[in-house]
Length: 222
Image (cartoon, rainbow, N blue to C red):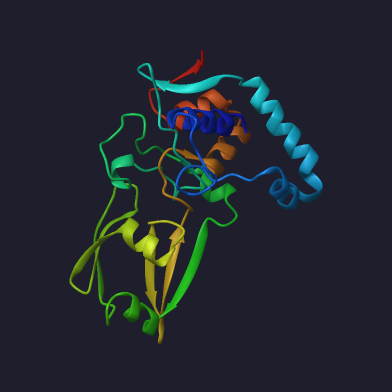
């Protein structure tokens, strides 16, 4: 929880304190939604969060004197991803692929399946659905897939079909295709389930943050 708190605080500061509760910036629950989501655990969980906020007061993640872009997501496929492999822009030395094997053990929905009829896929991809996976990133996520003689990135297909991640395999059935994914989210930065796994193995929040954000320092915001 402390690792998430510091990452979230850093993300807000990197956006100059301007965020909303959508996927455009940082999704979060207001108090009423927390009551619904946490139900009988509401008071217990809220106290844990408040305690984590208090005990990390003012702490943000820095790289060479600058506040980092503290991206995070639900769970990886076993490795995090280089930022430039998913988001358009330049590489960042602290957002690089690292081991995150904890996700498979701690994410109860690590493996997901989504099935599409052949008819629906043909409609979505302009009349037919003939595919060939051309390349993968070292992390195992799809880099390029050709569909009907047009190249797509793994991210483009993930977003078009609303898949859990861009690590997917495709299984053909008689009248449908099943997309099988590993992990949930873009895979860049902190894995929330990975952080949980590290914490349960005894790592503290600063060790967790310095694993997922390479070469950083935790500083008190002035």
